[in-house]
Image (cartoon, rainbow, N blue to C red):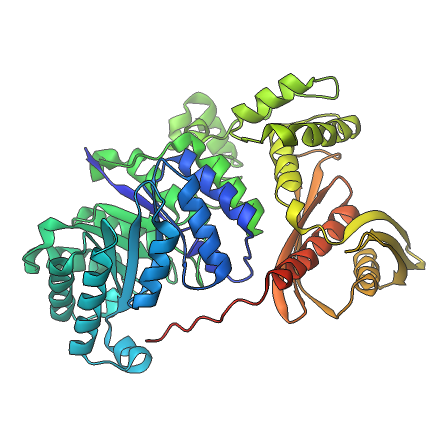
Length: 515
C-alpha cells in the first residue's frame, strides 16, 4: 500500500481566498491543529510578501516540530533569502519555489523566452540548494505548458538540486485524463525523474480538483497539495479531507493511503471555517452537516437495516460525534481543564482562570454546554486579546414593527476612555452599526455580514462574521454571543480593531508577482 504525502497550503493558498484575513494567533492555532491532523508538509505562508507574513512563518516554523514547515518564494534571490531566515529554525526546513512555464505566462506575465525561464529556474534552485536541505520546485500553470518544454526544464532543475517537482493545474483547466497524462509523460521522458517526488496542486475552477489529484496519483504522483475545506484562490484548491477519505474508502482501487489522522478532520474543518469565516456548505462531501443525513424514506429504511446501503463513510471515521453534556454550571475548574485538553485546546495555565470565568458565565445562561460551545468560547477568548482597542461595555436596542429602530452603545476606547453614542437605522443591525460608526474615527463600509448558530436549540450561541473596509483597509471580524446583536457588535469592533493593530505595526510593502 503506497503512502501519499499531504502538503497542506491552507495558511498560504487558503488564506488567499477573497475576504479571508487571519491574524497571527489564528494562523498559529490552525497550524497546531494541522500538526494534530498529521499533515506531512505545512506551507505556512509567503515570507517575502510582507513583514507580517514573515513573522507568522517564522513563529510557526519554530513552534511546529512534527511536520516539515515550508514557505513560498518566487524565483528571486531576495525571496529565497527571506524564506531561509523565516524557516531555518524549523524541524525540517524546506523551500517551495515556483516559476511560470506556460506560453501565456511566459509572454504576458514574465515577458521571458524559454531559455530565460530555464536559466532563471536553474540558477535560483542552485542558490537555494546552498541553504535548504529540501527544495520543491513548481512549474506554475504546468497543465497549459508544452510537454517537451516542461520535461526539459524539470530535468534541469532536478540536476540543479530540486527534490520535489510540483505540477500545478493553476487555473483548474485540466481534465483528469489530461492531467494524469502529464505525469505519465514526465515519468517516461525526464531521465532523472526517479530522483524526485512528483506533487500535484489542483484548483477547482471546473470542479475537478479532487478528480485531477486522484488521476495524478494513479500516474505516479506521491504528494498531493490542497487545503482544508478546499478554500483558496477563486474556486479554491483540492479539499484535503475529501482526498484522504477517498483514498481510505477506495483503497481497493487506488492502493494508497495518507498518514492523516482521519478522526481529526471534523475538528480541523470546523476550526478553519470559524477562523476564516468561510462557512462549509451543508452538502459538502465529508464535512458538510448533511453528509451523513438521510431524508428519503427509502434511504432511511435502508440505513436502519444496514448502514452501508447508503452510507459509505462512517461519521465516526472523520470525527463527527453526537454532542454530550460533559460540562455544566456546576463543573469545576479541574474538569474544565481536562475537557480542554481532551479537545486538543492547549490553553496556557495562566489563561485558564479567565477562560473558566467566561465558561461559568455562559453555563449560567445556557441549559446545555456542548463541546462545540466550548471550542467556540476558547477561540473567542484566546484569539482576540491582542486587538481590543475598542471594547463593548453596553448596548441597548429598541425595536418595534411600528417604530424606528434605535441603538445606544457604550464603548471603552483606545485610551480606555468611555464613548457613548446613539443612532437609528432601517433595522436593528443597521441602527447598531450606524451607532458604532459614530464611536470610531473614519468612515466604514460594510461589505459582508453573515450569521450562524453554534450548536442547536433556542439558547444556541450566535457567531457573526463581517467583512468591512476601514481606513482604506479591507478586513474581517468575528463575534460570539448568545444574543445576535451583541455578537454583531463584537464582530464589527473586532474588524475595526484589526485595522488599528495593523496600522500600529506600520505599513507593509506591496508585493509584485512579476520578475
